[in-house]
Image (cartoon, helix red, strand yellow):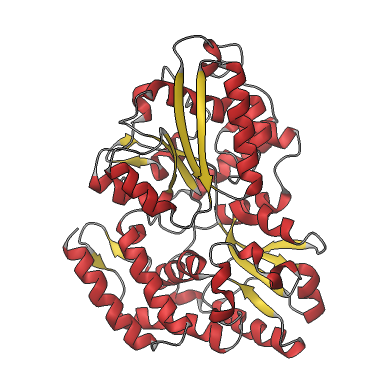
Length: 446
């Protein structure tokens, strides 16, 4: 993949243009219709579409499929959806065995690994007669979706990490998260919450978000680089720096900034289902913009705001922001599928049809195409919290990490290190030492 910094300025212009121009259907050569609407006749075709998501996303995606089938009676789309647990393993197995779905919602961080292992996905640049790509920013596609010079996926949205705050509880405990947040201030605020009520906590967070919202940004802020250099296939941080971030994660648990790990294991990858979040006993949650709606829906009885992501208190030693805008997922088409053109045409409808935009709204974060954003903004379908989160993310200038840093094997090692300290099974020093050995073994085979 082309390794470049995600250009926050470019994305800011992209979003600003959206707000200035208003909403409306595109006046393309098809009279405002997506290219998939040119014909609804032909041979009977069955496509499979796999994705993961919460109930609202699932229902919306099913509605889009149903509408498409009504407009294209020769097309039948079989949905395959569920939670994200085990999704990567199932996808890896199905791709390797030639049994994957035709249309695939893919993890952004998984793509480099898939690209390395095989030629699984179509290059959308080869199908411009079947899908209109003009609504996407070329720069955003190039920064996030191009691998080895090929456009192998399309962004499901514009997403960022997020610190969603239960302002009602924050006010009760005397915590102000409207100001700049530092790693150190999170610890102090966590202590203050415990003093107010030791059954309440500052941060709702799990291992997955400790990886994406704490571990990797913390490393990048220290070094100015992703964890692993793709060219040298070496760690960019020292063992001492690795110990530092693991010690910080340990301190979140030792100081009761977050709930004990043993009490939250069953809510992994589903933070909105934690009873303490539902009951309003967390001040904030570390998440991403695409999950904000699910989290606020779990408890609609409080007021929410979005805070800035944490930085180092000593800005003079911080090499960059550590955070950046990125697609929450990529939509891909299986290259070995029997009906590739039909699958691409469905994605044209998915991204460019006005009704589809209204149905999908911001359920995969802020829509990635100009026209869909216009439609959603005109109809009040993009939530202000999601927009605030993305706008804050666009102000960040972190380095795009897609590559070995987000490789599934590397991420597994990072999770192992984190869980060993958060469950008290290992010291930060031992976890870092063991992790470096495992990472070096993995990288030696890449």
